[in-house]
Image (cartoon, rainbow, N blue to C red; front, side):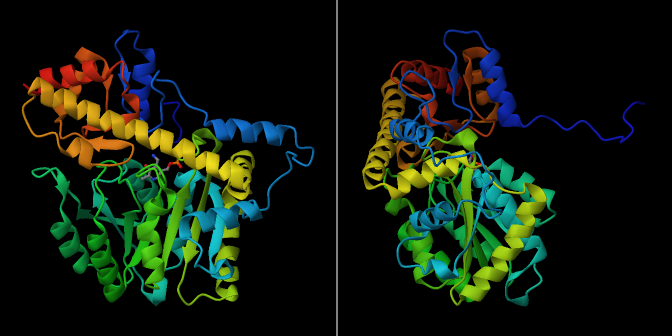
Length: 404
Ligand code: PMP
């Protein structure tokens, strides 16, 4: 046996494997609704025009070099990224921020930190995640041996949020337990709590001394408005709830492969000394794992966030993406209604963000993939960005066929 480690063969990541199958498929009808990456109406990746413009500015700027960033990342990026998600009211002299390998890196950094340090002297190793959640949450948290528990989230019968289930489960959580919350545009369901429900969750979390772990991968993508999508995070801050926030620029700037993101730890009574202590821990972690984060994506984000004309242009680009997706939700639902496809399809337009949880079962999904060359996750999640004016009728007709 040449495998001296005797390590088993892990199955490939289901979603990336699916995207690979799509690539290898030579059908003219094929549709990719697997991975959450924005596509144009021509099914092409989109470099945001504002990003393209910014890249040209950077390439021609003689002060831009390929030197290492500091261990905690680009100092200006850390500040402007924090402001973008946390808002104006937070004193950034008390917020601990580390630049990370996009949102995934932020989740990992946070998980490692929480494994070593728990809030308020409580010794909990438990993290509650929504059922379902982004599949990688399970991988990231189990990898560092956090104890994962689930709270109900998706009600398959109503195709909506099971708020009662979520609330009553969290009510039974212990002080110091971590609660993962999707800041907006919940992945995979596309279903978010209402503002009233968020307020109730904030009260419960404060009362029970739970520690919120916000994962924010879609700011601006959900509603097309950056502030609107940061509402829940900022409401928790207004209520002086200690928490952390994972932030990604993958989707809202289309910087997927550049890995630009940050982790912010926001504590209500923090002082500059608190910030320094936490950042020193994050710096040690980062030094051990990556030494220092990648420079280019963060540089693009910083330039856009600090240049008013570029910032305005970015907001328009975000709107372009959000609105195309809203259009596709309406068109897909419209087609299914027109075809008289069995079932109620209202959830397609009430859900928000990149994804829709269709409610299609694994058999139906399998037929869509194998017979119709329409690639979607086995749990019935579709990335709306894969739809366009040229394929929406075909997708609707195919769904109609497998549902009957
Ligand atoms: N969290 C959630 C909920 C996500 O959907 C994603 C992207 N699929 C991420 C984090 C992280 O993505 P990235 O590492 O590309 O920023």
